[in-house]
Structure formats: C-alpha cells, structure tokens
Length: 382
Image (cartoon, rainbow, N blue to C red):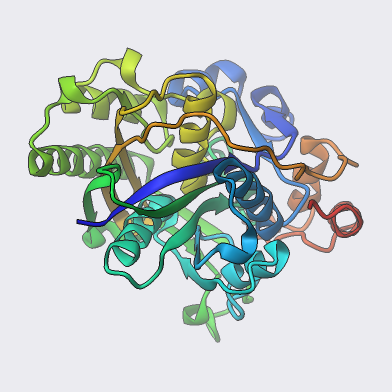
C-alpha cells in the first residue's frame, strides 16, 4: 500500500497583532467579554496578499523537507480568501515559488479547506496521479470581514501554513479520513456579496455582508466534529487514549473543549492556539501543527487527530501517524516585508470602506494597502 508522508511544514504568520483592546476602540466590547466567550486574546492582520502569505509558508515547508520548488507535482490552495476567481490562487503560488512543473488547484470548504486538501492530496499520491504535493491552509479574512458586526469581528484573523506531502512505503501520514457536510444549515454561516448569485440583486460584486448564527454554528460544529472523530477512530480501530495529540480547528475555546471531551482526550493532549491567533479559518489546523512541532509536542510516531468544521457546514477529521523526523532539514530565508502600519491602522483602513450596514469593498486600494502592496512587491521573499 502507498502512503503519503508529511515531510515538510512551515507557517506564514503576518507580524501585525490586533488585540482585544484594539477591537474595543471601535466595538462595544472588552478584553474580558471576548476572552470569556471565545478564549481569544490576539489575532494577526496581514499587510500582504493571501498568495504572498501562502508562498512564504510553502518556501519554509519546502526548505524543511529539503525539496526544490521545481520538484513539486501539485499545489493545493485551501481557503476561501482569493484575490480573483479566475485565475485560481494556487497558480499564483506556483508563479511565486517557481514551481513550474506543478499542477495547481484551489479547494474551498471554508475552515475545513486544509483538512479536505490534505485528504485529497493523500488520495492523489496513493493512486499514483502525483508523487508529492504542497497543501496550504490560508486566509486573509481581514480584508472582507464585517468589522461592524461584533459577532464576527472579534473572531477572525489572517495567516497561512503549508505542509509538503510525498509518497512513502512507510505507514505514516493520513491513516484515516472522514469528510462530511451538514448542508441543511449552510445558511447559518454565509458571506453575502461574493459570487455570481448576487448579480442584479442590489449588492455590488465584491461587497460583503456576513450572516453568522453563533448558537446554531456552535451546536452543529460540536456535533459534526465529534461524529467525525468517532468515525475516523472507529475505522482505524483506535480510542481516545491512544491519540497523542488533538490538533483541532481553532474556532472557539468552548467548542474545542467540548469536542475533546466527547473524543475522550484530556485538554493537556489538545493543541490550543486560539488565544494567540484567533480563528484563521483554513489556516488554524496547519498553523497549530507547525507550532506543535516547534514546541516538541509532536514526537516520532505520534498519532494525531485533526478535526474541523466550516461554512457549508462542512466538517471532517483526519487521523495522522507522524513519521520519524520532527525537525527541519533546512530553513528558508523567506520573510514578510517590513510593516508600515499597525494592525489597528490596517483594520481602520478597511472599516473606512464599509457602509453603516457593514458591507465592505475589501479596502485593497486604500492608501494603507496601496503602500503595503508596493512594499511587498519590492521585498518579495526568496
């Protein structure tokens, strides 16, 4: 049987930090209110594009694996933050990396995009379509979030991470995969204004207005993630006490605690990063994986459980057996260009483009982001 081992990993976390106190300067909220309800303290705001964040993460993952970009067979861009619909974002990453031989595909299942992407890449490697793949989880939500809606504005942040997966004869990588979708409730988490469905309906293409039913999302998220965990463990013949580390989607601390309890895994064996990065949607699981490796919480042969849920409402869980190597083979010099503005200044630039109802035109060409894009263009990481 062919396997798909994870041999490289890297993150692309922008340096600008938006704190709960920053949010309280324009929302009726406080650090205590946000922390008690979500577990979040900070989140990152990017001054570069999603493709640029993804490219930094990919360069670091390739260096970690000791692989050149020219040897990459496939790039899977997982996320719902795209600069354009056509061409796809994965092709932009291909150009940025110089991975001229790589196929490129976007995969959007919202917050579960990395989980779906890693499952897909594993299957393509196992059936011989490709020998290896870069799988990315990336989001640039700050550019189109409804900053006037406290229910969503306090939750989300920007970030990216990537893994390099390659064919292996050793039993490692994704050993079990369960994917699903609770589509009956798809309307409880919706970003209106992006998509052909809004043409002629009085919403300018590119403007956004968020629907977010927190209570319904919470209940269905716990149910979907719990069932996915139970199914994938049952398929593999393992129980919660055999899982070395749970690396869940970081949507909300209470959701994480509830899923861990149902999975039979104590919180000391759960990776939690929500306090530092908030909900980075598709990026939360891979960023948490990279951080777990840095912290020494993943050891050779570790059994990892990766559950998640997202808009749609998609859900899933992966069971991953780690290989023998937990340290990078090399390091990349890829880095973010210098910051010209604080996180709060960048958020306020987006807010300035939003009308009182929260609709946003993404703020990409305000002076703040025009400067950031120019700086990025002259400081492209290598």
